[in-house]
Amino acid sequence: MSLVDLVMPKLGESIMEATILKWHKKPGDTIKQDETVLDIATDKVDSEVPSTAEGVIEEVLFKENDVVPIGTVIAKIRVGANAAVSNPEPVPTPAQPQYEDAKIVEEIPYQPTDSSQSVVGSGQSSENKIRFYSPLVLNIAQQEGISMAELENIPGTGQDGRVSKKDILAYVANKGTGGQQQAQSPQPQVAQTAVVAAPPPQIANDKPQTEYQPPVTYSGNVEVIEMDRMRKLIAKHMVDSKHTSPHVTSFAECDVTNLVLWREKVKKDFEKREGEKITFTPLFIEAIVKCIKKYPWLSSSVDGDKIIVKKDLNIGMATALPSGNLIVPVIKNADQLNLTGLTKQVNGLANAARTGKLKPDDTVGGTFTLTNVGTFGSIMGTPIINQPQVAIMAVGAIKKRPMVIETPQGDSIAIRHMMYISLSYDHRIIDGALGSTFLNAVSKDLENFDTNRSI
Image 1 (tube, rainbow, N blue to C red):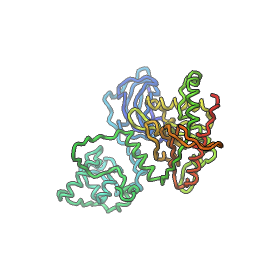
Image 2: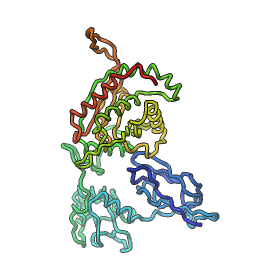
Image 3: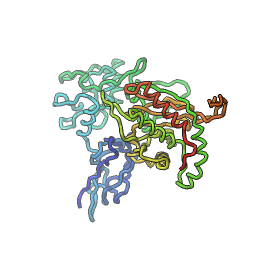
Image 4: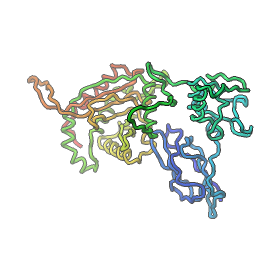
């Protein structure tokens, strides 16, 4: 008999951690190889983790909702002919001081280096673990003017005596009514700026964008709905993008009559031959890829004062989920695919997104994003850049409108299929001239679509 480690699997090049959503097995349960042990989530997609061996779950090392780095051992499986769990009762999650420590190093610029800067909670023996503070607690302490000396003496009700959000808010409320005296610390005063996370950027006439918000009361007939995990991630991603990139949006009007008529003519034969429905999306992506070849800065990112131009053109396409949330699967190397290949990729990724079958690698590596706001009837939009990209294009609804047509024989009025397209771009490296030039290049490519093109 032996123990086999089950580790948090690698989920993509840029993914360094995952959240445990649900354990399907507990200590004492038998497990087959490739049977699902737990569900995990990244900031992109949810995934299942299968067992790498057959045996009995000996212990689980993390709880649900814990955030675990990639490669960390999350459970142990006892294998062998006589495999039996030594402790059938659920094993309490052991403290992970190294992991918590690493998290604090990442999020705040200060880390205790000697015993005088670590705190043992009131009533705890010196054998207990070092007391750590979450970035949320430190953030509240900073906003409320609570010194480190005070923070060290607040009784904690969390795991291992840690101070929770509830503890510090209760302390603030009591302090405000005079019920809590200023705590005196026997330890040396530590400069607060050394241990408190730096406040996030602020925009004029707006509140700081932090996790902590003062308690709010709601009047009238209201319904309070807690955001789900994906919505929280989307919200954070959008706010971070606005804080990172100075957004500019340009618009163009596009006559897509030729495109519409060609698709209408070939869609039945295309579906019969390829087994796929051809939508407008692969046609839009094809035009975008052609124009990025002419203006490569649209497929880039910014690293300090460096511009990183991406030669691999990976086009993300924003996809609405049944839940109302949004996800952006990525078509890798879109410039190397013909129209049939693009169609199959677009349909496959869209279906996988809607059925929850996207893989982690399906949502990473994008260099430019397309979003179709016309799907829901909007004629135009001002999309937010999908970081670390520098541009995103939105296409609106296609509408029939009377337009003036210029011909050598004179002007005339005709009914045309018209569409607005917009481009939001990062003004740090893309100026209005480049942004507008690229946008109009895409517009001209769509307008000049060859109606005699074969499939």
